[in-house]
Length: 463
Image (cartoon, rainbow, N blue to C red):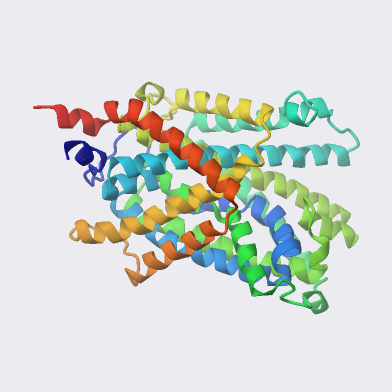
């Protein structure tokens, strides 16, 4: 019984800052942080692929469905971010409501989500850069743009972007937020240019048939483009650096998701209206559609916008990775020697260096396209826990201050759980196997190391 009590020991709710991180992020900064992560590969790549292979012009309903599923989870995130706080995101919420063991599993999965997402997008960034050099007539050699499994030596551009992002994060969170603002402004401008040009080429005949794959195609499309929405939860990892986390975190989470959902639907509708959906199964569908219509210059601008968009995704996911690790280390579940905060920049530079080095080796030498599939399932699992956390804490801690409350509770959290579980059930068996292996390895580490050195374990052994 004592053993089980330790495993499911919950952490007290506190709003005191647990580190020396600098509080400097406003609600606007947090909203742009979310936009910087959500608008990336989804809008520049997945929109076309999902339309061509899954939903056709009805892809706009796929985005609406996926956005709705994320919306339920976002409201739950907003409540827990305002009431529980902490830079650990779903990990911290699980610790407060479900105990250390569940928190460890979710934290371990979040490390996979943020790390693999950042690495996968870095490789995608490298591919776009290679396309840009090809367009300029000076292609980079395969030896320096492909991993050893695909005929190269290492993926140099991917390694470079990871190193550059690591340097930006080491300078300080405010500097990182400024860089994110600039890049977000660039890609929103590029998207606005696309919307303006595409509006003049919209042909309603391209929307016929509107449901070429049926209603099931819309659902399948939602499962595919769900990857596009991953990132709004990264806003919650900035809790210890938000000026007013109880108010600003809910604003940043909900606003970024709403803005990006509207942008996704508009772009998807115009893209399938300016060209037949069957032609969009290419690596750069948005740029290709413009080039096929004779807008070569605008298409090249879109390609540059895609590079900018993917850059901010790497930035925010790398940032989220370090903050989740930091939260887990502060609780004793991971080595605290890596989490020393630099006095001048007030960032965990040592941790950024270590995680950045691991990520650089990964993107340089390993083909992670298949591994990246488990990012979705890890994220969905975290969303389920967050929605469940709202229900549990409403029951176990009814008097806890809640600056933001999830409306229509318990209906919204329950719908969030059901939607996420449904999307998880549609994922392939190989994804479930990979996810199970990763979770099992995490449990081994927990029982061999983390449980023995966690703060809750140390407190329970004190007289």
